[in-house]
Image 1 (cartoon, protein in one colour):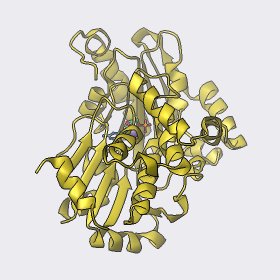
Image 2 (image 1 turned 90 degrees about the vertical axis):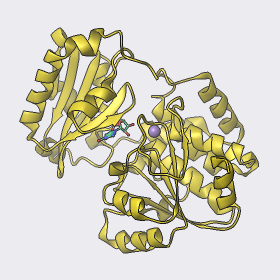
Image 3 (image 1 turned 30 degrees about the vertical axis):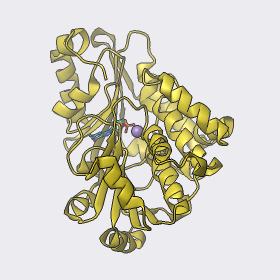
Length: 344
Ligand code: 5GP
Ligand code: MN
């Protein structure tokens, strides 16, 4: 049977469904998870959404937010494990490799449930029975919309679902600015607006909900923690644990910071190094001609999209930054001048 037909058959009777997404979910991760969850609930399924970690409070407006279980919290963990063990179907959203969900990854690998992967990242691992995957999609939310339409259920997309999905498309296209802002993105978004998405309200919830601490932190980072290396077209932020503590940094407070480095004239590669409890988290952004996901995968145990990727390091903050600078200096030719870089 064709994959989509098998999947449809699976969904044709009420199922116990477990939905998860990547660590530190962003608007696309949570929006696709809750957009899909709200749809599946309407179809009569029993749905649990579990995130591997917490996520920014500017996403708390999404319908179903109060039912999300955070696997990193002891209070939610037992129930999350129970739901995973009972699940007949598992949906993995907005990630392509199982190590993006921490310990949940291996539990999913071992599960007998019907595993579905809906995603737009490069190089997917082969862990799902049904894959609804395309790197052409700007956001997983775009794919969730298309899947619901394919299943003949566009009429079930209400204002709440439309808003969850709109949020992910808005943020993963950088506010409709990145090269992934295709005609299809605009067509999908037009439909979502038609279905009730309030675009200025969503932008307000996501972009205009700064705390004073966060704004001061951004000011501090730009004035004191930005390193600009024009000679290698690179700019980056180095944020220590102490800095994060000083500004009482909350999850999501560093979101978007790396873009200020990329916004500099002549800068083609931007990075943000932040010192977390479990090591150094790195965010990379690049101008269109630089494939930064390959760099992240080769040297920093990471991956992502061509111009927006991430990685990690277990070295100290200082060592990580020195290693990074050295790598960029040594691979300038390959990074900035290669003709062989393929777009996606
Ligand atoms: P961000 O910098 O916003 O955390 O992530 C940018 C993009 O890179 C996102 O699509 C995210 O999923 C991906 N990404 C971030 N960190 C990692 C990582 O450690 N591993 C992989 N494979 N992808 C990552
Ligand atoms: Mn995404």
